[in-house]
Amino acid sequence: MTTNTRAQQTINTDRLMASLEELGAIGAYHDEDADVMGVRRLALSPEDAEGRRLVRKWFEEAGLTASTDAIGNTYADRMGLDPDLSPVMSGSHIDSVPTGGKFDGALGVLGALEVIRTLNDHDITTRRPLTIAFFTDEEGCRFGTDMLGSAVATGRIPLEQAYALTDADGKSVKDELAAIGFLGDEPVGQRRPAAFIECHVEQGPSLIHEGFDLGAVTGVQGISWRKLTITGASAHAGATPMSFRKDPGLAAAKINCRIHEMCASGEYGPDMRATMGVITPEPGMINVIPGRVTATVDLRNPDDDAMRRAEADLDAYQQEIAEQLQVTIDSQQTARTPAVAFDEAVIAAVEAAARVQGLKCRRILAGAGHDAQEWSTVCKTAMIFTPGLHDGISHNPRELSTPKHCADAVNTLLSMILALSDEAGNA
Ligand code: HGY
Ligand code: MN
Ligand code: MN
Image (cartoon, rainbow, N blue to C red; front, side, top):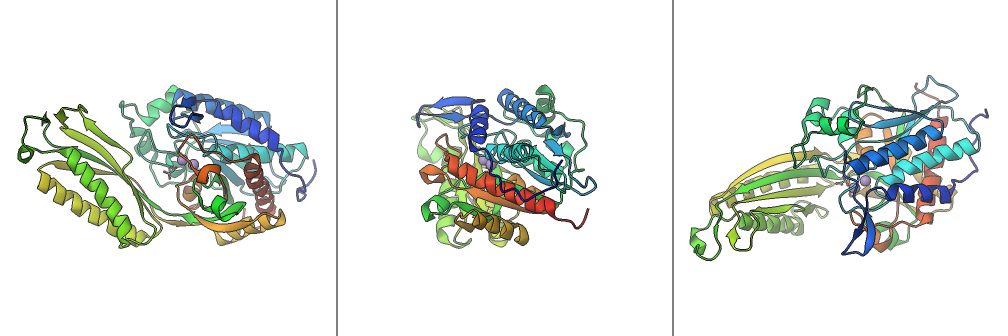
C-alpha cells in the first residue's frame, strides 16, 4: 500500500467514455426530432433502477463498500490512511429528464468512479477516506422538486415529506424506492464529508463559445418552481361567444407572456430566467374550451431579493388575471432554493488544478441546479464544469461533450480529490 503521492497519472479516458456509453444505453430512446439517441431515465423508474444496479456493481468491482440510505442515495466508501478523518466526497445523479443526454449527472458519478479506478490502477491510498455517490431524483421531473436525495441527506427536506411526494399517477417516492429495491436502511443525515466536489457538463453555451476548457463554478443561482392549476369552464368552441368564456388556457398564456416580460424588463436584474415548461389543457380537444389547465413556472435568478420581488409580483398578477378572466388559480410552490456561493478556497483549487494541466479555465455561475448546492450547506464545496458541443445544449438528446471535454474535467477532479484528501486539519 503506497502513501498518497501526487498522482502524475491521468485517468483512462477510453474506460470513462465506455462507462458513459454503457450507462447511456440504459433508458436510451431514438429522438425523432433530433434524430439521435437520447436518454429517458426518470427517477425511480425501472430504467433508473437498472442504471443504479449497474453503477453500484461498478462501485463494488472497484473495491468500494457500497451502502444506500433511506432516500435511496447510494454511497461507496474507500479507506484512507487515516480512517478517523472525515472523507472527501464526489458524486452526482444518474436520473435524467425524459429527453435527456448521456452526460448530465452521469459524468459526475462515472467521473468520480474513474478517479477511484485510476487510484486503484496506481495503488495510491489517500490520507482521507473517499466517498463517491449517486443521489436520488436530482432532476425533480417526476416527483416535482429537484435535488431531492441531496436535500434530504443535508437536512433541507424532511425524509417523511420526501416520501409522501407523488408522481402524476399518484405513486409515492417511498413506494417507488421500495419497488426498485433502493429503500435503503442507512439513516439519512449521517454523512458529513470534509469537502464535496462535483464535475458536470456546463449545460450552456458560455465555455464553448468563449474558448475555455473548464469552468470553476462559483455557485448556483436561486430556483423557484410553482405548479398552477387554473380552473375555468369547458364549453363549445363554436357556440360560446367570447364574452361568455372562462378560459384557463388564456390565463396560462397571459401568465407565460408576463414572466417573459418580467425577464425583459430588467426590473428583477439582468439575469432572471423564466420558463413555463408544462402547459396541459383538459380535455385537450380542438373544439372544447379547456375546463382546466395545469401549468408550471420555473424562475431562476442569481439575486435572492430580486427573486422574492418577482415571486410576489407574479402572485399579484395571477390574482389579477383570475379576476379578469373569472377563473380560479391554485398556485403551489414545489421547489425553492436560494442562490448559493461555493467555497472560495475550493474554487481557487479548481483553477489551480486546471492551470497545472495547461487548461483554460474561468469562473462561472451555474445556471442549473446541482447536488453540490445542497452539500455546500454542510461542507466546503465547489464544482468543475466542462463544455458541450452544440452550444452546450442539455436537457436535450443532442447533449454532447467530447472525450477531451470529459477527460479534462475528470483529470481535474482527480487532482482536486488528491489535494482535498491530503489535507490534515479537522477530523
Ligand atoms: O432544474 C435544474 O436546474 C436541474 O437540472 N435539476
Ligand atoms: Mn444535472
Ligand atoms: Mn439536469
